[in-house]
Length: 252
Image (cartoon, rainbow, N blue to C red; front, side, top):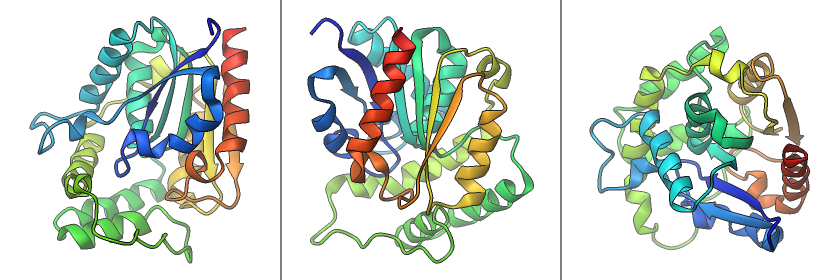
């Protein structure tokens, strides 16, 4: 099909891209020419010693070029959403649209409540992996929301890389410099999916800030979702309708 939407999809910092987006891509079917790209932070046994959000942006650019995507739609969740924002600031001319599924970072011009929360993320870094991961998950949920139970059986091999990769992202956020003027100049449609049971001081505040930056910005709330049961996995049909509408509008 010549009119398929060209899309690059980036996962969060825990579940690999192909697994994260399987349900969504099954619904989108042949309406998309989709590339699921894993994060650069996990390209080796350990995070690259000079890892930054620029590392992730360069990886997106390389992947798009390999697939011949001159212009494309970019979708990123959590750490992939932070990487997508960094890419947009650097290479916005390559994008037809940007979709953010609760990005993990949107620059360091935070509100006081956001900064207080990020201090708690920093405090997790010295903890042993199990304690780090448990704290990392809980900080992204609304008060009283229980995290999903771990899957049965032994953890997959890729899980061993996650604590180090997530720590590398926290450091990258601290040293990141998001060009807000470049984002203000980005006139393509931007979509933000927000979970109603996610941490309000994290994701809702971020959405409010981004709404004052991007000229064409839409927030859709999924009331029953939180950061670790996201709509691309749990409500893929609803999300697919929103994305197809966004992509069609962006290409018109």
